Every structure is written in structure tokens, then in C-alpha cells.
Image (cartoon, rainbow over all chains, first blue to last red; front, side, top):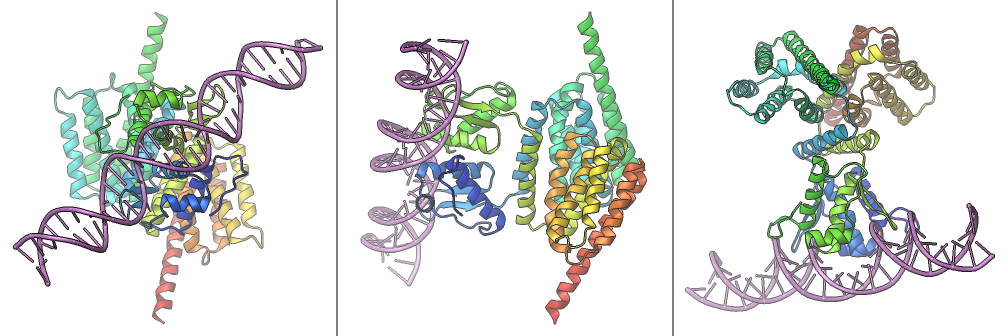
Length: 245
Length: 245
DNA sequence: GCGCTATTAATGTCAGACAAATAGAAACAC
DNA sequence: GTGTTTCTATTTGTCTGACATTAATAGCGC
């Protein structure tokens, strides 16, 4: 837990790193209180601003939380799956938009992963999960539903499917793929897609899940994947046509 | 791009959020320069320390980078897959250790995902990927190899397998599952496992990838998964036995 | 044109102050 | 004794102003 004042790296980065390593090594455990800012100043021999900037870095990663007042301070945070999921989705989304991931790659990844958890989902789905899926399908069939709401419902449906696998780790990892690729997919295909067709596939998937029919679910997910890809190709063709004319 | 000074939330959090939203919305694009700290002070009507803490939050998420000197400043960062992968692995690791994920859950998730990308890997593997896999298998067979090195090689082997699928998005998502669960797995099973058995399975997997035999790869991954689970159960039994005596 | 220096603009760090929140102790009323 | 209020100490959040460090650029001598 020391820093090198002669190093080129900024002090606040070094300090953040030192503390992060203590957390990862287990020296600092969940809900442990870090020394107060003043104490950290003394320890690292830097000013309070520098310590604070280091703490903000850690807070941005949800590694610590801070509380004001007497017996306040910075505490090691228990990372929750929900927090981490939010972060993961944000990062994944940015990653894809900034690197201009082509639709095929994203779609391929997304359905490959979703199909991976289908067997578990089929095995373990509860009545709750099934109900959520049915409700979302019903919502998708409502006339006059905005494109945006339809997309949201789509995400919710697939999330219920993934959550059915009853594996936190899987859900967390999948969230990045499913929720981050969804906006990309919607942006490209929302104008061209047939809601009927999608609802039909969703219904088949829900049926498969209900009847513990892994093969059906897998087949329908594959079909959904193929349909989505087909759509994107049509949209691409339309665009190039319009460009020519 | 405004903040609410009457809100309960800390100012630096609000400012970070405002800027993050501009980045995510595309108003600020990759390599765009943010206003200087002084300009941001004027805009948000806060002090420089507050602005700086907000910027540090964004820097911690790799959303921006800063440069000193004239014509320096804060620039929107292009998220690279490597950076994001590192972050993702760190978070996943912490998530699992803090929430005391049981081995079965982690193992199940990890192999489910890995099997999901096997078909693509089998289809697209290059000579490079195959060579990496063979090299790692060879390394795993060296007598006197430390447990730590064996584990590293194990990760490298599986990473090569995943990368064979030639899908950045998939590789990124998988990294969290594979690399973050590996330490957990190693910790639990390294004492009990038979390197020979693992090398044999790895060899079979490499063969399957080489010969475009998706079924073989899938079967062998399933076997590896089952073997790992079996090991963990044995270790657990051993422990409870020792506890009793 | 080349190399040197001075300028300038930006981030990084420091020091000291006050504001605001909060828990716990102390004082007080009953 | 008990419940309530007030006070106090501690800690984070914010502000101000200063100086250090870094790096691009303009000017100047040659």
C-alpha cells in the first residue's frame, strides 16, 4: 500500500490503484471502512484533493460508497448484480456504437449466447417467468403500441427468458449481449419488421419453455436470429437502392 | 446539459452524468475535446475541484482521457475491446468473490457460454488459433510446471478457443465468464485434478476444432464441465470429512 | 530553414477555509 | 428513569486561490 512519487503516473491514479488492489486482494472487505480522507492524506503524503480524486475514481466503479457525517467515510461496496449489470450494459452499448460493430456480428453473438442458456431456462423456468413472457407477448400485440414500447417489451421478454435459467452469473453476462445489442437491432430493423411474425416466434418460444421443449426453443431462437438478419439485409438493400436513384 | 443545484445528489455526480449522457447520445464523439476545466466551471457554475472530481469519475470508466499542456484537455475516449475486457474481467471477478457465487453456478455459466461459441469457432478457426491451442497443450504437459502457470495456460487455451469464433462481441462477453471464473475454479480444484485428463480433453477439443467437428468439441466441453463439477464435489466431500474428524 | 527560448494554455497538485450532514453525547424537562 | 432536545465532534462536499508541470506554438537569432 505505497505509491511512488517519482513515477510518471498521476498520483490520484496510483492511489486509486493501491486501494483497488487491497480490495481485490481481500485486505479490505465488504463494508469495511477506509481511513478518513485526512488519514489517507497523511498515509500517502498528498493533499486532500488528490485523495478525493482517487476516491471518486473508485466510486465511479462502484467499488466504494461514501457517507457524510460523524462515523461516515468511505466503505467498501458490495457489488450487486444489478449495479454491475447496468454498468455492463452501458459499456457494452458504447463499445458497440464506438467501434461500429456491424449488425451481423452483434446479432450472431447475441443469439449464440441466448441459445446457450435456453436449455437451462427450459429446465428451470418458474410460473413467474412464464407469466412475464406471456404478458410481454400480450403487450406486443396491442394495436397502437409505439415502436419504442415494442422494443422495451422485446427486451423484457428476452430478459425473462434469460432469467429463467436461474443463474445469476449467466444473467449478468447475457445482459451485456442482449440489452446492448437490442437498440442497435431496433434502430436497423424496426421499420421493416413484422410484429406478427415476431409475436408468433415469441409465442412459440414461450410454449417451448412451458413444455420443457429445449429443441423447440432452440429452433425458434435460430429462426428469430435468421429473420432478424434477413431484415437487416433487406434494409441495407433498400438503402443502397435509394442511394443509387 | 444542465444540472440541478437544489438536488440532493452530489454535484460532481450530476456533472459526470450530464457529460456521460452527451457521450452516449453522440453529441460528444470519439476524440472530441471537452471544454476546458475552467470553461466547465463557468458552464455548470461550480468550482474547479467539483468539475475535476466529475472528470475523474468519467476517466475511471475509460470514457475520457486527459492530456496536459497547451492544446491539452479532456477527450472522449474510443473504448477499446482490450480496455473493456480488462474492466469486465475485474468487475466479474469481484462480483463473484463478493457474492460468494457457488462453484456450480459459475461452472455452469462458464461452460454454457463457451459451448455457445464452439460452433462458430469450429467453422472459422485459423491456423494461428490452432497453433496457440497446441502450444498451450504442449506447455500444460511440461513436467515441473507450477500450478499457477498451468492455470494461466488453461486460460490462454480457452481464450484461443473463444477467439476462434472471430466475433469481437462474443469474445468480449465471454472474457468475463471465462477469465473471471477460472481463478475460482483453480482455487477449488487445482489440488485434485488430473492434468493428464485435462490435457487429453484439451487435445480432443483442439482436434475437433481442427477437423471442423462441432459435435466432438461440444461433447468434450460437456465432459470437461462434468469433470470439473465432479472434482469440486470430491473436494467438498473431503473437506466435510476432515471437518468431522 | 534550423535550433533555441519565451510564452501560453491546459491539467496536476497543494493548502486552507467553510458548508452540510450525521451520529453520539450531554443537557434538560417530565 | 425516560424521552426529547440541543450541542458537539467528525467526516465528506464544495469553494477559492495559488503554484507546479507539461506541451504546443510563436518569435528570434543565425
